[in-house]
Image (cartoon, rainbow, N blue to C red; front, side, top):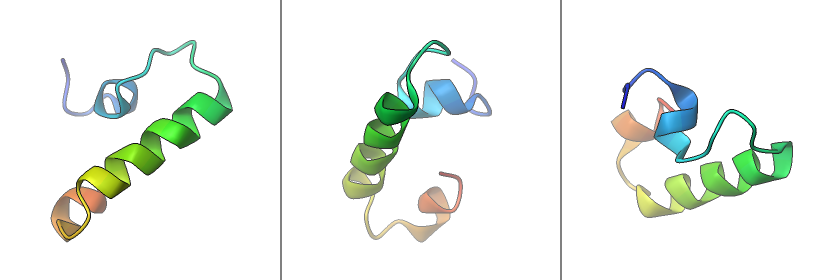
Length: 42
């Protein structure tokens, strides 16, 4: 897994729909709330 691959960071495939990507992004933001350094990479 590449830390620079946004699909890997979000836990989705490149075939994911826009809505799936937005949902994954929201889950990642909630999971890491309070960790501003990490959130800046999202």
